[in-house]
Length: 459
Image (cartoon, rainbow, N blue to C red; front, side):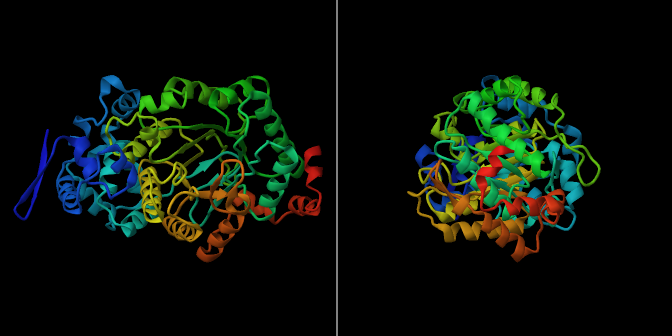
């Protein structure tokens, strides 16, 4: 089906839904690289007009990646909740935008719609939104998850403590963990990206964190972000696995490039659930969200697995994969892939707000790694701006990296101090279980060892 819209005497036509979504997307370098971007601002506006008039039901009947060729498409189609979709069945994409910005769209109503909204619907409506629209709509939505801490509550901001080390040195990692805990980070997860991807290293790091957790009675969950198969091997060998991690994308082919499938993720999910390591949280509920996913615009294109679909729509499709497994944490690593996909601070900021909004609209507990690579046209001032915008938008968590400089992955992110800044300026607190620990005797005992991080290794 073709689509068209005239501006003045010029009539713009779009070959199919895939073309319409791509041309309606705000400018970003990845879509230019893929050859799918609008050729002019006028063509982009025409596509946005046409998209605004498109009935949401059409997004159920036309797929941007063929059903027969892609298991992510099959997941989206086969799990769609028609009953949840019913209240907005008659809407166009533009009417959905207007409704989301209206007083009628309460947190409860948006949450009820989530199972009926497809990733393509979320992506489509985000393409019609200004930055302030993305913020005010996302701010309405709270997605709360639990393991040993409760993440996503109103008035709260959590942080992942990311103590990466270029050689996986236990003393260096322990020092970074101590630094982060003393500065109030870690209530989302203590998550280490290992330099080496093997089960023994994964198990050793997990045991170190778990020993520390038990010694100081810290309400945190741990994760070593090795490949999911490596984590499964460590789990089978008896390692204390809390959250299971995997990078995911929006097409079957891109996920294959990550070495994963829906079946493999299901295997990991089931194995993790059988451990029953979650705790009773502050509200009395037992934490049972055990998966952690990271995503990022451009991942499918970088694997040549994008099917000529724009990168923001594919990013939203990755959220369908995540949603299926009721994760504890999901975050876009927004500027990590590089300027080939998000060229500068402006494009990174727009993408981060889009990803946060689309994930929340689909029912995900969204965080964001507010980050950039050193060859992008961006700097830490750009990250301060995006960090603040996401805080206003109600982001669940951010990253806490020593000095905001990841010395293992070689990119720039946010620091422990950045989380403190955002909590202070917006009047936010850490997760309730973690906040109570920070005020208790166990935290004071940890602080007493601040000059001796090597003692943590004996935990």
